[in-house]
Length: 290
Ligand code: FAD
Image 1: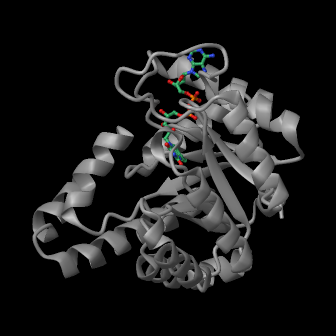
Image 2: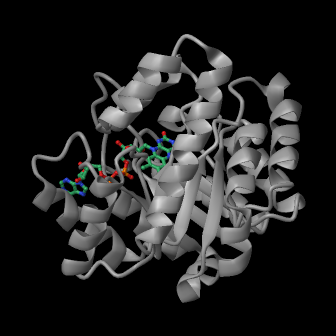
């Protein structure tokens, strides 16, 4: 099924993200994780693409597993270090396997990377154009409520985002954020700029103290005082931190929904039990608003 179909009518949706393993000998474990996750019945499940375009076959394998588990798969694809030929090969393989949804991403620029020639795409919008030319896919793209770290200004970032939508992105998934006001302001700005596709809010449950530092570095997200207090109090106590992280994420989702945000994407970090806890905390809200 196409994700544009799932998102139409603005009903409540909760989707999950998983990542493939770094080594092939862990692929069965990753597939088992997908099967466990599917029991929570997410609206769809996305699978990330290795940094710098590595291990594309692993992403494909996990996307197939999601599909076989009865859940709509969304396969991420990055372009920054791949030739046009390599991109075409991956997209055609997805098509052959019946994967209908692709999240088109540029990928982070590796340190010291110099663009070899025009066989490489520089921005996600070029990848969107290429995917569109190769088949009838539903294409999504990334967005950044707190501005992409490379952007000179919010204005410039929004203009580039609008162009991705004009090129054919049918929905946007946000970078993680911990302060709902940042997302709600961003959503309002998108509306003012006539970016009218569904914007899915990306929520990362922080369930251990080490995760927070890395997540903030990667995402450029601001952290509200309330969350710092939780870290201060429970950061050294793994069980309490996990519980507090799950409750914080659940409350964040409920507050977003109360503010009219119906589409949520959970960065599960391949933890089925965390995803299941959050879904349990939302069970009536989901079943009454599907
Ligand atoms: P783009 O949309 O191309 O934007 C990148 C930068 O270029 C922005 O600053 C933008 O404002 C600017 N820009 C865009 N167009 C132009 C233009 N025409 N001229 C000048 N500047 C321009 N990474 C992975 O490696 N694998 C994954 O699976 C993955 N999944 C992700 C999922 C989500 C939901 C998100 C939010 C990010 C994900 N990332 C992933 C990280 C992502 O690849 C990086 O954030 C990357 O730096 C930017 O990707 P993009 O698609 O947003 O790029």
